[in-house]
Image (cartoon, rainbow, N blue to C red):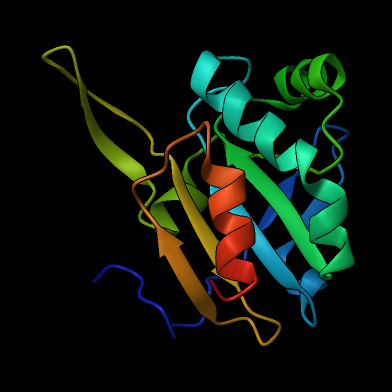
Length: 154
């Protein structure tokens, strides 16, 4: 059964670009924007990440943490972070276990081809660890502003 608003967010532990283990439970007491994306340094993923970068201070002012998750390894995340000055952690889900737990890894179709991959989904997790919002139809260019509006109750 897919995750729904009101469900407890599955806890996880994933490495960041420096190999530090980041646990979702470390952020209890803060709201978390957890976004899944397919691949570092691709057009849509770059637009989405830079959108969050551009509103990062506004998110911090609201006591919100941003975590990006993709199947890319730490080296890839390091290059992507450095290239676009991303101020938030990118986490490596190389075995797709967290993407799977969040219904964000599965069969994708593009140009008539089917393959397994990470989907572009975002979850807002409340201070108590429950899911407040799920977005499975992400428009990379405007997504960060959409999330800001949701956080502000609009």
